Length: 344
Image (tube, rainbow, N blue to C red):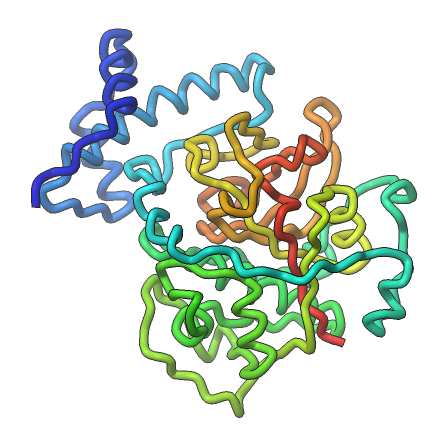
């Protein structure tokens, strides 16, 4: 197989950076990077090095702006600095988002779903919330750079959080079980949707993380439904694309699984602060990555943000979490497909 060519635009950017003297990536630095992340490319070393050399000056430039107070987030070289995530996600385009019934959230929520909720409307919420402080959120997992299993991490994460809230005990659940066993239209390491996994767990349940540990690959299904560690009776999909409604749910009910448009270099290289990506899209057809909203708050300078658990490991972002601009025109589609389980 011939070495892939960089896209034309990327190639032009790289040439410009060379002219400006901003690609000072030494052979030693490149060797150290590959060793740190155990990278092996075969005959494609030059392709991946070119991507890395494009990312390095971009990270440096962003961080200069951050130090000058011109942007609200930091970036860092990491495990994604040598890859083009959009190549992997071309496979997910064959898995369209499932149609979901409309759900209205409001004052009658507790009556409708049999859950005791001391409801506060958005106007009554004077601060934020961080569900990690209550012990309902498990450790950050790492899906790997070649397995599109984010949907399994956000699904297992949101169910375990709601079960922990109900039972006052956190039992980490198995994303690998979902990767191996949830049927089409989900497709293991090639992508999937939270609601499809919810429907599977309503019938089959889910294993504990300890009993069915994660590997960044799809395997044969090894699940015995008699050993289920958790299940759900129903699930809710918010359909209003309304960040205020989402905030009400996160505050009153608990963590929510959301999907976002993440195919941007700012997201790949994020290291901390409040992420804002002008080119982010919000249509459901543009959602490429599932994550878990565990809270929200407000920064004194950069404004409102969502607190979100990712599945890239603890070395990415803020110990595996990121803050995304909130009340910023549905940034990256965070309010386009919010979903959470009913465990009562």
